[in-house]
Amino acid sequence: MKKAKPLKRAPFKLLGHSIEPGKTTRITLEVAKLHTNTPIQIPVIVSHANKTGPILLLLAGLHGDEINGIEAVRQIIKKGWHKPNYGTVICIPVFNIFGFLNLSREFPDGRDLNRVFPGTKNGSLASQFAYIFMKEIAPLTDVIIDFHTGASQRNNFPQTRADFRDKGSRELCDVFAAPFTIDSAVLAKSIRNSVTKLGKKYILFEGGKANRIENFVVNTAINGTLRVMQHLGMRYFDVEDNEEPSHVIKRTKWIRASSSGVLNLRVENGQYVEKGSVLAIISDPFGKFERSVKSPTNGFIFNVNEIPLVNKGDAIFNIGKRDPKPVVVAEKKVEN
Ligand SMILES: [Zn+2]
Image (cartoon, rainbow, N blue to C red; front, top):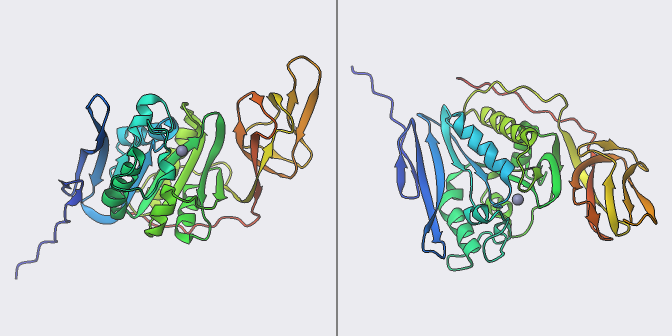
């Protein structure tokens, strides 16, 4: 009797294209045109392995001026790490291409894409982007890693965020092992809200600040992504563990400027501080006063406002209390 041939994996269908098993293809997502009538094309790079496995989306540039994530996904593609042995990887290195062209977080009409999900077919430009993403791309995925930075001059020490009640997403944040893993509530109308409602596992990565490339942040983003791919059984990567395990943060607090003036930082982002220690000095530029900003609690500084001029009430630090329970992630074996 003839032995039956193993069934070939079905092609992956996305945006009207069909990607055969074992192939990597670049396709484009077209949503709208510039006012010059030039179509805006968003490159989408898909790598469909010969063997079945999870579908992972690497999404960056949802905010057009957040470059660290764009650079992380670019490097992953350039090094061929987006080609899994099992499953499918979809890369969208620059989603908000309008903002990317304008060096801006928002769309040309000032809308923030991450506040209009799930979008509507005939809504604002940003809303149309959200709608197409939710209709054509999100339903096909199992896991989404969404790369962000702090807005403007707010610098985020590399961290992943999840609502810890969402056990699947939380587990993947632990696998990602950024320096901080933060319990954070889901914002209304955010991409996270829409995709987690669909039952997708979602990692929000935050690292660095807008309009900057910081190699430490980029490397943290890449290593975390490779750990997640390995954990999902998509491909084996030999990623070194961090020197320190991720600090799990459950409670956070913004520290605000107690007066207007010139801000001189006295701590490093990522640093552990004790209650009462001086975090910054606020002074007037004419030599009249100097006031210290003291930490109200023990904890880690994980976000720093790097604008040296502040108004009373401006958020200048975000500090997080460590969860004393250590993270335990089960080891998984992955074939090459
Ligand atoms: Zn962002």
